Amino acid sequence: MLFFLLCYANIYNYMNIFQKNNVMIVFLKSGARKKNRQNIMNFINKINGIKKIKYYGNKSSMKFLSKRLKNLKSVLKKINPKVMPSFIKIYFKKSAVSSIFLSNIYLRLTSIKGIKLVYYNKMLEAKIRQFMFFTKVIGLILFLFLLILSIFISYSAIKLIILRKQNEIEILRLIGATDGYIRIPMFIEGEIGTVLAFLVSISLLYSIYKIFIFYGFDSFLNFFHIKIIFLNAMQIGVVFLIALISGIAGTYLSSRKFF
Amino acid sequence: MIEFNHVYKNYDKNYILRDLNFTVNKGEFIFITGPSGAGKTTTLKMLIAMEKPTHGAVKFMGTELNDIKKSEIPFLRRKIGFVFQDFKLLPKRTVFQNVALGLEVSGVFGDVITKNVSELLKAVELYTKKDEYPLSLSGGEQQRVAIARALVQNPQVLLADEPTGNLDEETSKIIINIIKSFNNKGTTVMLATHDKHLIADTGRARVIDITKA
Image (cartoon, rainbow over all chains, first blue to last red):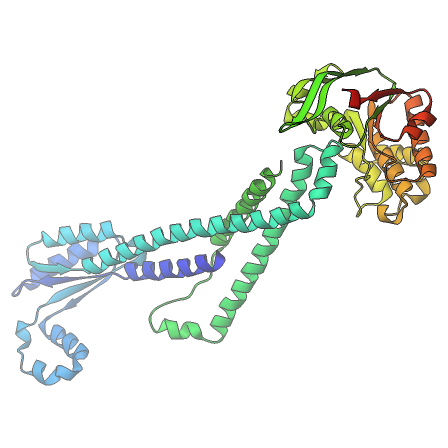
């Protein structure tokens, strides 16, 4: 379960970073006056959540294009820079970016005179949102499956303990022990087992994570802007709580059969 | 104290008990006799709610055991000591711990346990072996431990199911004398056996022959 959560946290984190790396490009109408352009830039600057804005004129646009299309330099040379669009690139603060926020800005900008087109990767955003929804659903299904599995494991472990102690349980019941008297040590035993299993798992997982970092596998992934993170205290706490609950549930189910 | 009124017990079509009727008064020593399979153990088990009659009523101190709630059974069993033919001791616990178990399940701890268990072990002449494990004891000694455990909760009734079944004649006499000594102190005893010599040697005791039931 811990390994699954670590994978899930990393995928989610990656997609979140990806989603928040949003940039909006505002294409200005050809022949837009400097004053008009300045007004647009002032308007954009007043919007909360803007990190910085950068203006690209016709020539800068050409430079921008030439930089990215180095192989087509000879073709680009023949093109008059005046036909290139002038645009404003808007960088948003990561903390401020959300789909509603971007949609709002998009609508406000498209209604301004002098703006030809506003581009932000709506398609990509939708895909990311779809993917994140998908990971959430799959994550929930996997989580439920693992929860049932862990309950079953503790159920089987306690059942084995009960079978081993059946004679002792029978004697205790004959001399007047209540179900609680017999069951409480089983719950304690089940919980100790759960805590130990959790500690072993988290140590093992952390060791694997450290080895991964030590041998520089993360720097390879950095190339793809993927940053490997370990579970935070809250996530570990949640898994610990789930482990305790599954331990109790497993013990309850296995002991219920015998009482 | 104990009443069996028209008690029947059958497993499928096989009747173990048919119209069993008897009463036991406080302080009595009762022998339940009959051949193997006559229902002696079943009769005793009904008193600790391990078995229920198919028909009829079993009463213990005015309480009808047919209708006893599952949660009340442990409290009933604390009022009744049970000695088994196969002792039913815990092999991983010492003699002292086995006897103390009877008190621990009732929620008694500390000095009371030490005092009561020590007294009982002295009464069954096993105090010197209190730290030994059951498997290192003879059959007679193990049965004395089982008697001590059954009596440690100071029950009103002691039920013994063939307590001498696995023991030689000499040891059987010792066990019966120990049980008699507790009966003399006021504990009601119901002892199931098919050993007629044992009954003859015991003297003042009532015999209930369940083969006639």
